[in-house]
Amino acid sequence: MKDFGRQRSTVKPDEMVMDEFSVWIHSDIQEVSEPGIDDQEGFTGYEFNMVQYTKDEFIMKQAEISKETNKILNTMLGVNE
Image (cartoon, rainbow, N blue to C red; front, side, top):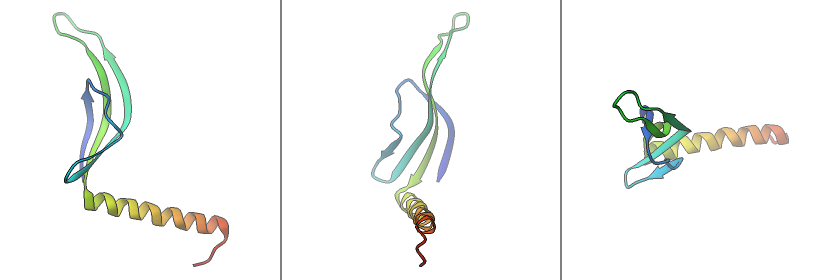
């Protein structure tokens, strides 16, 4: 996993993007508009958190989430394993 922190873009990112090797997660997407100062141009676009996972890391993360969700559901339903 690589956490790229807060990023900016003039194009609104998708929440999840997959390429051949990675899964990119964009979260906390917010519109940003800053006025220009003196002769510098302002910024209008989006700010967001960006994390890159390898596909294997992402699959393992989803499996852990699924396992925890199943535990919670089983507890709520009173099912013993």
